[in-house]
Amino acid sequence: MTERPIRIFGDPVLKTPTDEIVVIDDKIRSLIEDLVDSVKIPGRAGVAATQIGVGLRAFSYNVHGDIGYIINPRIVETRGELEFVEEGCLSVPNLWFKTPRYPYAKVEGVDLDGNAVVLEGEGLMAQALQHECDHLDGLVYLDRLDQPTRKEAMRQVRESDWF
Image 1 (cartoon, rainbow, N blue to C red):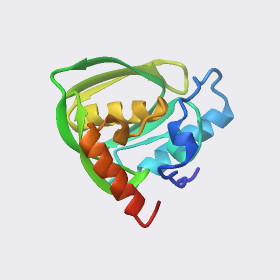
Image 2 (cartoon, rainbow, N blue to C red):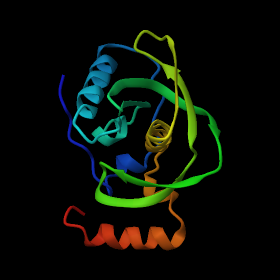
Image 3 (cartoon, rainbow, N blue to C red):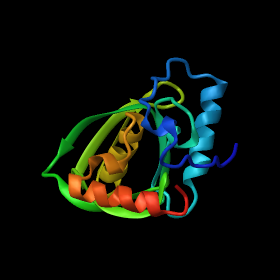
Image 4 (cartoon, rainbow, N blue to C red):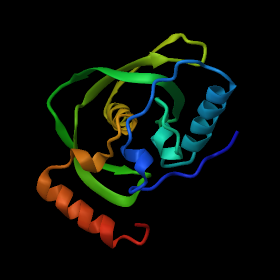
């Protein structure tokens, strides 16, 4: 279909938890196609439906050239101690902050045919799974920052040319 514009921090859709996808129809197939087209751009590790203005539970990913999607994802397992990793977001352009993430994550959901899908990984994949599921729960990575870092992040957001 098409690459869709990314919603920017401050848009209410980014702070609204998503609805489960109940029926997989042509509208949902089109959404998934748009999510996949939107994540293919270099430098993008994931795009959640909320980031393209849709309040439904789905995201696409592009990690180390592996491109895909998942419908109704839920984190079912994380492992290891929280680590602070550099993180950014398409919805918070040009700002990067050390964000606490688990080094391993496992997500379960379904594909367009209703078949069970399991995504799991370490490093960037684990980070992307947690980041995108956060979007679907109405969170942005800034919500995960400790108070002093969040205060600095919000100052930088207010001073940015896109806010």
